[in-house]
Length: 528
Image 1: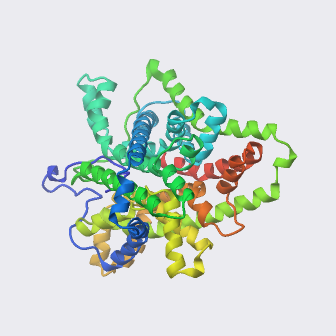
Image 2: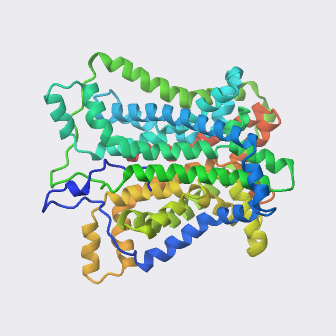
Image 3: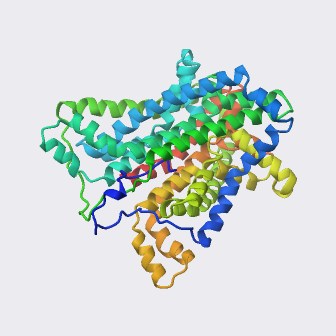
């Protein structure tokens, strides 16, 4: 199961006899212990919240838990969450695929610049987008506002893997289609789009998981989903059982979604067949569609990035000197960067063995490890935080209410992000070099350190950058697990917004967007 395959998939059975195996072809057999042990540690780490949910949800017996799950309110939350996810995923597929095709396959003026700008919405937290749209258009409150805010911050999750797929696929099939008289639209629908399906489906899974776990945008828009229902249940009672039972439903939804995506990939490979020479596609001339294409790129990126910035600018302008606290802002920004960097480092370290096993090995063990990595991603941050508090109080009291516990929460929440980027990078590196290293007597650990990681380093770095961005933006787990007296830009922004101090919140919102924009910009440049 993999949410962001970078290149189109082909059936390995269709490979001609004697042809070079696909670069990312996996091997049967048990993974080496040097990879299996750390991957198992990462899987257990990611599964920790599920252990908490099992204990809490069954605390009053199965009948009580089933009563919560079978309640009419739970059915309403299920319908609302699925409906919101369906709309956001559909919109993100349209935005992500169309922008990827325009920036990679066409002669779009400034394509390289657009490919960077399109990734910048990753720097905008969902709660900042929700605040911006709600303050500008109060009538958007509810489903429409939540859908708009979540779409505009999450469509890059589709754009990035689809862009990678377009760059990795052989353009010859498209050229043959056009030479047979098929127009650009028919060629795209019948030739290009089927090759993009695995990457687009993987991105869609990440978007759906993001929607399932979002707390900020739906709370600001006052639209009840599972995450808001869990938070309300948590705040309304000291009994955590109802909140845990609702979280179990989210886990089941995640497993079903991930299993469906894995089934859609089947046993396909991940690279072109044969031994042809890679070459870039000939850009398609846009002709009279040039201006509409430019307008489309400008409208999407402008709406996703400029609207939050303009809102922050407005509140900064109407504020006064009392709303500016430069020393506090600088300290909070430094804390945010440090915590996000620690979270990205731990997450990437845990993701590496899981991603290598998922890319290089077949079988139940590899599948189980990869699936386990996704366990915490669809859970709301507050559920993950409560599970870590439960664990720390009983088994690791010295780190309770300390920074390491918060960093661990980031790793549980965002492990799939790092696994996706790393797995894609490993798939694109030829395994024959690893085979040669092993034949020369290198141990699996040395092969990983000296061959696999250096070859996949750019993709691993890109995954780490993306993880860094989402760690910076994380809110509910940070609110619950941060050490006493510590604030991040996200928590300070939330505190000020909660009291209606929009002008006081604006500096933190602007700083958060600008800081997160740096790795987002670098990520966009890496993909161009």
